[in-house]
Image (cartoon, rainbow, N blue to C red; front, side, top):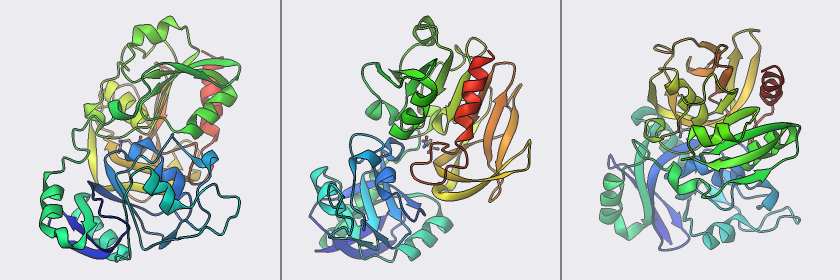
Length: 349
Ligand SMILES: NC(=O)CC[C@H](N)C(=O)O
C-alpha cells in the first residue's frame, strides 16, 4: 500500500509500506553494502528507524548465525528495495516475513538519497512512517517522539540475569549494555565471560575477581546510562567499546555530545595515533567523546573524516576504549587486534 515518512521538521517522503503498522523513532542512515541483518539486530539501534543507503537489501535473506541479538531491535527499516525472495537458498528466511514476524514495519520505494542528504543537512531527526493517508497522525507522532536524546534505552535491552559464555583462559566480566553477539564471540576466544546486567554494582563485579571488565555497546544517550565505571578504574583492567567507550571517557571526566547525524557504516577511516596506521572501521554511534576535560588519558585513535575521538587510553588505570566496533558485524575486521590488546593488558596486570 502507499506509504509515507514524515519527519519532525515536516519533510515528507512517499513510498510503499507492507502493512498498516506505523514506525516512530529517530531516523538514522547506515551506509553498509552488506550486513543488514547485523545492523537490524544490533541493540544499539533501539529507539531508531534505520534507513539503508545501499539501494537493495535482503538478497541473501537472514541466517540465525548473523543475529547480533535475539531479534530485530530497530523501530523500522527503510530501503529503496527489499527483496521478496532471497537468492541464497541456505537462508533460513526472507527479510520481509522475518521483520513482519517481529513486528518491524518496512518502508520501501522512497528517495533514500534525498532522505540521506536531508539528514546530513538537518541532522538526525525523529520521524514516523505508515500508510500514506495518515499524514497528520504521522507528523504528530514524529514531533512527539523523544528519540535517543537523554533516553536510557539500555534498560530495555540488557539481560536481567547474569550468564556465562566462552572458554578462553582469562576471566572477564562483561556489562551487557546491549551487547552484540559477535562481541561475545570475540571475547569468548580470549576469556570465560560472565555477562552481567547493566545495573550491576562495581563491588559485585570486583567480587567475581575478574582479570578484566568489558563495557559493551548499547543504545541511547551515554549521559542517561548509569554504570559505576569509576568504581572499577585502577582496580581491574577495563576495555570499553562504543557506548562503553563513552562511559569510560565520562568516568575520566570527559564530556559527551551528539553528532549531527552520527557515524553508521562499515568504511570509516580511523588513524591509530601511535603508528599512523589507518584502520577501516565499522561504526554505529550518534554520540561522541570530547577530548577536552579527559584527565590522565590520551587519545589513541582519530576519525579521518571529521576528527572525532575514536579511542582513549588511561595507562594508570589500565583502561582503554574505542568508539568503533572491533568485532565488525557488519564491516571490516581491521580492528580485531584490540581484543588481543585487552588479553595482553590482563596478562600483564
Ligand atoms: N553502538 C553504540 O554503542 C552506540 C553508543 C551510543 N548509543 C551512541 O549512539 O553514540
